[in-house]
Image (cartoon, rainbow, N blue to C red; front, top):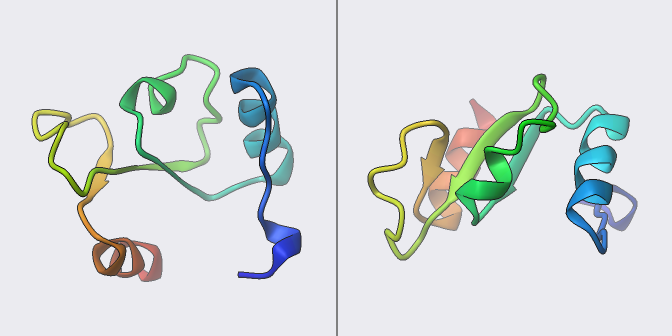
Length: 76
């Protein structure tokens, strides 16, 4: 991924706005509460990165427990 495709935002609202504005098709985060935000863009596939198995009961999102598993999900 090139640097011009990586963004860092200071607030949750700015992060959600950036996801929507860029037309992001996939979004990976380690916090289910962020992925569950009501204003999260509907067209973005939400993937919960959970390498420490902290959210095993979370079923609202795709989950990945490793970078390899993330790569597989992104290539599908």
